[in-house]
Amino acid sequence: MIDFLVDCCRTAIYVTFSLSTILLSSQVLISYNTAVMKTPVYLDYNATAPARPDVIERVRAVMGEVGNASSVHQFGQRARGTVEAARKQVGDLIGVSPNQIVFTSGATESNNTALHAFKGKRVLISAIEHPAVMQSAPHAEMIPVTRDGVVDMDAFERMLNDGEPPAIISVMLVNSETGAIQPVQEIARLAKAKGALVHTDAVQGAGRIPLDFNDLGVDFMSLSAHKMAGPQGVGAFVFRSGLTFEKFMKGGTQERMQRGGTVNVAGIAGFGVAAELAAQHISHYDTLSKMRDDMEARMKDVCPAIVICSNNTARIGNTSNIGLPGVTAQTQLMALDLAGIAVSSGSACSSGSFKPSHVLKAMGMNDDDASTALRISSGWATTPDDIDRFIDAWSDMVQRQKK
Image (cartoon, rainbow, N blue to C red; front, top):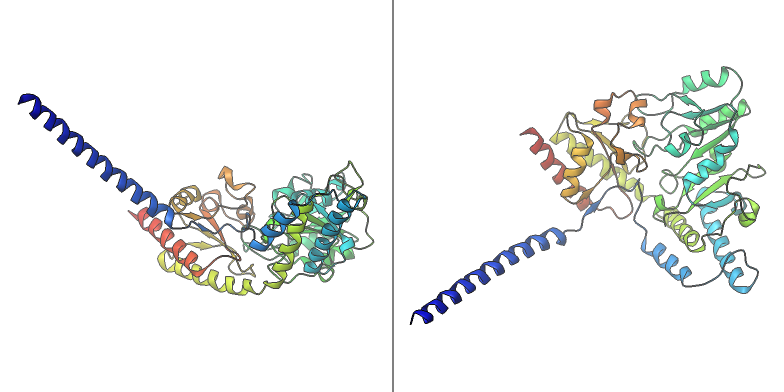
């Protein structure tokens, strides 16, 4: 009888333990499913844009083929045809002949190509350039910017007229952190009067604002595929027709002897499709601009103390840079990431360090204020619901900080 009762107790304990385990497992599973059912919101397009489906399909199709674009047999010639078709697509985006385009590994290489030959010569760059420009010309003189993050044209003219004329000037078309559009056309006009060459890093502008290389008046331009929903690791160096430049990547006769290295056929093919689609859908940035303005207004309603950078000048339609006084960008990023929202604290090439942005400091911000700024950047797949979810998560974070 005692043995029977012991067995009954053991069974009851086992059943109770099993039921508790099942209930606990169910709760964990429900929590997990609740977390993963909502797709994370991606608002970091200025770091890299999600590749468009047509781009992915084109890259996949070309990778399924074989052929080195430098080979003379039929496989090589087919690869060469793919590259040249993409060269025309990219050229059409910015209004140049395919002969003016050299494909590179990205805008960083293109920036280095433009500037590496000017060591020992006078070089001017804006104080808000990407690190790829700054580190390509560490001896360059910095052109100041206004508090709105735009090149100070009075200071620029003084620099042009002071001392020997510069050999080259590099000013980005659109700042990657604030979205401020720079007066590159006017800069080029003044520079040409002094006999200087002009380079622009147009990564954040190409495919987002109407862009014509010749109307801009520059000599060199850098482009990147992944900023316009193409593949990563592909870019372009664009040069004025008839202008020669010193080869940066040595080691072969590829790209009409202007850049060594086996050509990335699949990546270039994807770049071509991305450029063509960017041109077709450029008006979408008007919609993004309205979404951005509405988002900023709603954020200001929640916290009137926020600082909206470059809001008094022309900006690209997809970019906001917003400081939340008293709350570091690192704290904000972690809170938003836990809520499934991806934004950044500045350039993807430097934001991982959480150091105050050199762009914001050049605009006159102190370290404390600059360290509170978030960059929110949208793109082709961004929806109003994405913005709503960002606002909800950001508002919750602000309310928690007040407690």
